[in-house]
Amino acid sequence: MKIKVKPALLNTFLIIISLAMMFPLFWMLIYSFKTYPESYNSILSLIKAPFTLNNYIDAFSSDSFIRYFFNSTFIALIVTAGNILFCTFVAYALVRKEFKGKSLLFATIAGVMIIPQHVIMIPLYRLMVNFNWINEYYSLIVPWLITPFGIYLLHQYLIKLPSDIEDAARIDGAGNWYILFKIVMPLCKPILIVLGIYTFLGNWNSFLFPFLFSNTESMRTLPVGLTFYMGKQTIDWGHIMAGAGISAIPIIIVFLIFQKQIIKGITAGAIKE
Image 1: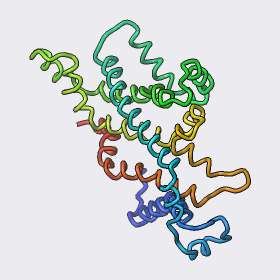
Image 2: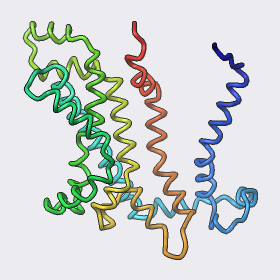
Image 3: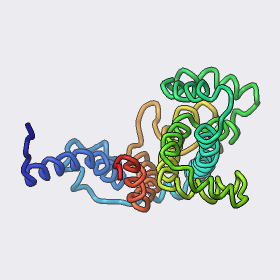
Image 4: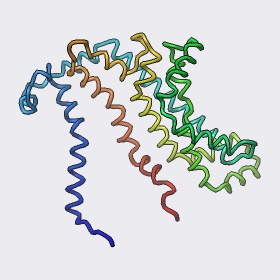
C-alpha cells in the first residue's frame, strides 16, 4: 500500500527541516557580529544590538589566526591529494590485479573502517614520538595520506567499470601508468571528487589528532586554535564565532562549486541502465 503525500505538505516539512538545520549557522553569524553577545538575555535583544565587524577584524589581524588558517589549508590540501592518488593505486590493484592474499587484504581494509579513531590514539601518538614527529607537519599529514574508507569507496566504484577500454589500450601498447592516469582516473572523476571533498572536509574539521600532535602556536590548525579563545573564567564567544564563520567559508565554497559532482558521484551506479 503506497502512501501519497501532497507536494505542499512535503515541501512544508522540508522547509521546516531546512530551517532547523540552518538555525545553528544563523546563531553563529549573529554572535560573530556582536560585542559581548553572551551578555544579552534574549534572542530579540541580541538581534537588536548594534552590529560590528570588530570580531572579524581582530581575527584577520591576528598573526596566530592567519597561521591556523594556513596550517588547516595546507594540511587538508596535501592529505586530499594523497588520498586521491594513493587510494586509487591500491583500489586499482585490488580490482584489476591478481596476487596472493588479495581477499585477505581487502577484508582487512574493510575491517579497519569499523575501528574508532580513539582506539588508535595512544599507539599512534607513541609512534609519532618515536619518529620525533610531534609538532611537525609529518604527524599531521603522513598518517592520513591513505585511508581505508577511500580505498573501499574506490574499490566499489572500480569493480563496476568494464575493463574493455583498458584491454584495448594494452593491445595498442599502453603501460599500466598510462592506463591508470589517462583512462581509469578520468572514468573515476565523479567518485574521486566525492572522495576529495570528504577528505578535505574531514581534515579541515579535524580536532583530536592535531590537538595531540601539536603543542606550539605555529603548528595549530583552526579547530585547535579556536579552542584557545576559551578562557578558564570566561569564553570569548564573539571571537570564537567569527573564527568559526571564517573557517566555514572554504567548506561552503567547496559545496557551491562541486554540488553537482557530489550528487553525481554519490548516485553513480545506483541506477542500472
